[in-house]
Image (cartoon, rainbow, N blue to C red):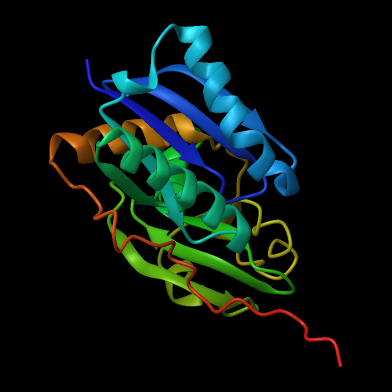
Amino acid sequence: MTLILNIDTATEKGSIALAGDGKTLIMAENREQKDHAAWLHPAVEKMMVETGYKMKDLDAVAVTGGPGSYTGLRVGMAAAKGFCYGLGIPLITENTLKVMAFAASEQTFSGGLLCPMIDARRMEVFTAVYRNDLIEVLPTTSMIIDADSFSTYLEKEKVSFFGGGSYKCKPIITAPSADFIEINYHAGYLGILSFLRYLQREFTGLAYSEPAYTKEFYTHTRK
């Protein structure tokens, strides 16, 4: 059995899942985004104790590599790389939006295109558009939303919007073909995709791996 630890701290809700051959064996979640860093390592330790597995039993570690929260991405990537370095096992990274789209395709999706959204503050979101088979129609981008943001797609077919960034977009994107749905997104879905990458030997180089922030991080400098 291929045992993979899956880590997702890219969004408001952090989660980890231990998966065997893509099937979730155990999962833990944290809903306080500011606590992801303090929560992650104790949660991994507790998970391994509860399942009876040792860290040395892992075949790989997978992590959502972005886009998402700047701090959250760094927390997840640093932990994943640390585990992989220490254990001498491969690192697998997956696009956060793709994992969200996969979750939607497995749940409430009923045709058309998938548009996951992560809140990037104000009226900006990290987003992409996928077909049901997870082929990209619009590559990952940061976008300031207005009424015409997805008009090219909405004129042709239904687009399902979801994720933390979609709530502020619902009053603005009002086309009849716009469908706003709720999904339950967690690291268990990363576990399925990471297993497929493992089978294809699609690993990320440890030395040069870094989060895909999508846009620059800004902070205020005190005058």
